[in-house]
Structures are given as structure tokens and as C-alpha cells.
Length: 530
Image 1: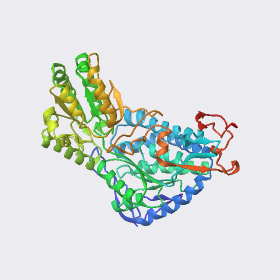
Image 2 (image 1 turned 45 degrees about the vertical axis):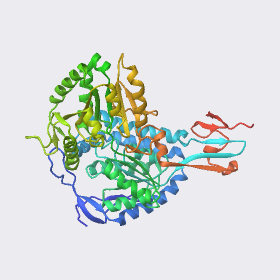
Image 3 (image 1 turned 120 degrees about the vertical axis):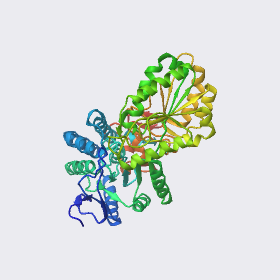
Image 4 (image 1 turned 180 degrees about the vertical axis):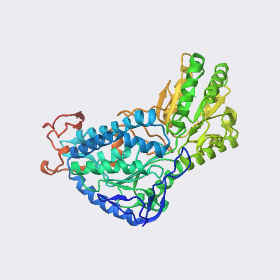
């Protein structure tokens, strides 16, 4: 092996990879490669990680829930202590701003969700324990086994391979994690894994509770998610890669949670635009260009009626877009996909109002001007599939309709989305009712009078949605305890004696006093004799 290639973390040890090749991450601001060399592992590394994870899964299942909670808390504390280094590496690899994006927004969110997962694991309600004491039938959720995490490139901390929501939820459910680092973010993944290793040793978790691989051949990624030793996989990223992994997992009979593309429609009704169109223009421009539009909840389709209020709004929006300069996208691959998506929208008939395709003179190769495109409702209805396309970056498409009836027909062609927004004011109620019904059918989260970006990490949050935004639509990637259940299954213990039951299903109140569903009612109490 090349001596300068970084190691992988397998079975509790940093060791040289069995390399099929190497890669270097790319600095999005310059387009140049970073110096550090990272390995692309052969299947032998994957096999070793799977064997270690399968053994760790059995050991984790015998440990108290509170021990995993303690690990997550101590790990969060170590990450917080190393915040300056984590943010610096994340900024260097992603091109995202240190402030406010990484240090003030994403880092606190990462720490918060790890601590929420710790609390949920310790308290235990996530298991959804159910007891029929008369028939002595009892059930609870348990971990699935080793979980493989494929993270995205746009959230190096809050969705990181070893720091993100999938990681936290999988550990909380009692599963070891095999983290596959994003190729754009290997350094921040390694730094986090080193801190996780320290926290594992400190709390006595199995050595293979957390493992890290850097690069895999695409075929080995598909083989991995289909392997019978895998309990489940979590993927966040583009639809094309998500579909390939999902097909492979399904063929192997394995569980996979995938959060994929989303166009996130925004419907702006005429009353709202007449009342505060200029303000809404500012909110929409900020939502589309914040983080260079590289958020899974960025508005990709905006429906308006082209009346006087609508035309004034469009003029104000174009002016806002025009004041935003070039923005750096997440690396050459993402920039290429963004250019292709925008080119496809233009080929379908969308007209650029602001911005242009391609590099910006005097800026780096991954810098792009924000793009505001427009098509008519008639054009949209003629070829909706050509316009309902995610351009992952700082672009959005206005669909300008002749009237509310045409707008309502157009919205029917929105496909499954993570989020949708409706802006309304006095006089818009008649249009609101049918539009809300359509958007609730097609979105995991529907927002009133606010843009879909700015997602709160809280238990009621739904960050998932109908196909193709996520799979399956019931579950959420954000919000404990529901996100934990993506990586769990329900087990029924029928007729078991008290001494054989796990603590959560015994008559006595378990440690942590979780809510349990006992004889038809949710309670924190004990089972009482009939």
C-alpha cells in the first residue's frame, strides 16, 4: 500500500486499507485537490468491518440502554470540545462558511441531535413498548443489527457519516454503525471517528460499535447494502445513487432508509403577494440562495398567478436575485449536475430572468450565479415532467399561471417532496383548502407563510416524505424518537414469564420511566393486576 494513504477504522483499530485505489478530496473554492491521500477499499475491508459489526451487535444487545446514552453524551462533549478543529476541517473540505453556517448553525444542531438521541436511548419510550397483561402478550422495538450510513456532502456535521442524524439514531436503537465517509468530506469524518473511538473506550462499548471506511467501488457499495449481515442502511443524497442502492438492498431483502431529491414547491397566493410581496420576495431569495441553495428543503418550484400583485412580486424577486454574487457549489461533480439540471429546464422552455449557466469569470470553477427561471402555466402543464426537476444549488423555477384554476391544475403535477410552503392572506381561504389537501398528500411537511428551509430538530418534525423524496414515507430523518425507529424492528414476546422478559416489558416500572402502552392506555406506571 502507498504509505501516505490514510488508514481505515475497523474493529476498534486504525489500520492500513486493502486498497483498490486512492483519491483526494477537492477544494470547491479553487477546484484543486487537497494533499491528503485517502484509500478506496477492496471488499476485504468491508468484510472485516461486517464481521466485527455483527459481533458488536450481539454485544450491544446485552448492554443497558443507558450505556449507549452515556456514549452519545460523552461523544457530544468531545465533539464540542473539538469544535474549532471540526469546523475548520469541514469548512476547508466543503467550502461552506465558518460563520454563520458551520459554527453557529450546523455545529449546534449536530450536538443537539446527538444529545436528543442520548436522552431518548436512556429514557426508552422510543421502544414503543406495548403490554396486554390479560393475555400476557408484549412487544417492543429492538435494533436491526449493523447499520451502514452513507452521508451527503452538503452537511459535513449535522449529516456527517459519524456525527449525523442517521448515525445518532442507529446507535440509540442499539446498532453498531459502519460509516462510509462522503468522498468530499474524509478529513472531518476521520477527526470525528477518532473522538468516537475515545468515547467508546470511555463508556465500555464494543470496539466495533463505530467503524469508518473512506472509499468503495460502486459495485461494492451495492453489495454492502445487500449483505445479509447488514440490518439496515441509511442514505442521504441524490436520487440516482439512492435508487441504485435501494434496488440493491431490496434485491438482498435488506432494509434501507433513503432521503433523496426534493423540489419542495412553494405556492404564493395573490392575497399574500398583494399584502407583502416585497417581503416575500426577500424571503424566497434568501431561501433559494442560502448555503448556495444546497439544502434538501430549498424551494425548487414556485407557483404564482401573473396578476398585478404577481408581476410586481416577480420584478422584486428578480431584483433580489440580481444582488447576490457568485456562490461556491459543493465540488465539481455537484456543479456538473447543477449545470445539467438547469440546462434541462432551459431546454424544456424555461426562460432565465436572472443568472446564466456556467462558470463566472474571475471566480472559481465551482462558483455559479443564482438563477431565477420562469415558465408559463401553459408550458408547465404541457410537459410537467420536464419542469419538476431538482436543480441542487442556487436556482429555482417560477411557474407563472393565468389564474388560480390553472395554478391548482399545475400543483397536481408536483411529485413527492420533503416540504412544501403556502403563503396566504385575507381573501385566499377559498384557494387554500384544496391546495393544502394536495400538498399534504405530496409532502412530508407543509409550512404556512414561511419558506421550507430552516428545519427545527424537534420530536414533532417530519423530515421525510412520499416517493421519491424518501423511503418509506412514514419515517423521519429528524426528530427523536421517531427517527430511531427507522433502524429498529418490533418483536412480540408471547406468554413469557417475568424473569425471562427484558426490563422494558416486565410489570415493574423500567429504569428511565418510559411511556408504555399497557392494557389500552399510555402510562409511565407499572402493570397493575386486573
